[in-house]
Image (cartoon, rainbow over the protein chains, first blue to last red):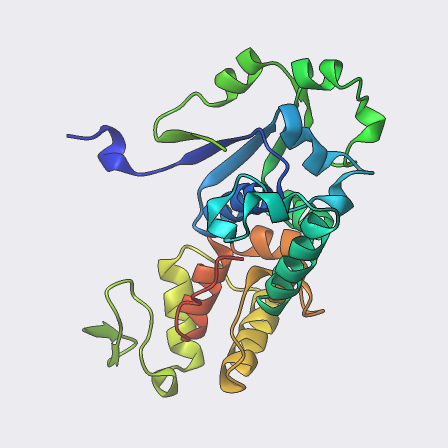
Length: 160
Length: 102
């Protein structure tokens, strides 16, 4: 018999990357959890921090190199302007689907009750301060703190 | 399947969403709200009416759209319909469950 009949009560999502496709994956999963009445918290670590860095979050890109599913040869994907072009195309498609931009999405997540945590170690490593970050983050915490917040029946943890 | 409610029967799916919006009336809405443990206030009704209007216009619903509707913001929407607001509100409104991820 599964614990709690396998019901998911809380999603703890760790976002370690800032390529647009990964950021959106984390945000959609967190928002989708809240829409189903499931609690959700995101821990932003390493490059994931860029998606809550005020100056950097409007300029996130999709990765055109090392991503075979883009169907762009790696050599061409590395040419100047390719990332910007691919990003522009992707953003256009997302707007058509009613997807908000990164900043609006963060506001939506906060309004929906998602908790946003910045990783202390990564903040120190990148020399970021709280003032550099999206104004509504819930705090800067350690891995240990994050595990503590994950306690409870029906919690699932996801690394992106 | 059929569901007996307010001295009548309505057609619902396995999640309890009404299949024929034309069968909905205010009394049924109130009963569905009671089942969802929600006491309907005037604010709730404003949102339910907005949802039904959008449904009549065949506009797909999402949390983002509700937030931009001018009727309610996302924070209040979650406060009025705690736990899965879009699902709960559409169920009470008698319209199909939105197939939206945002």
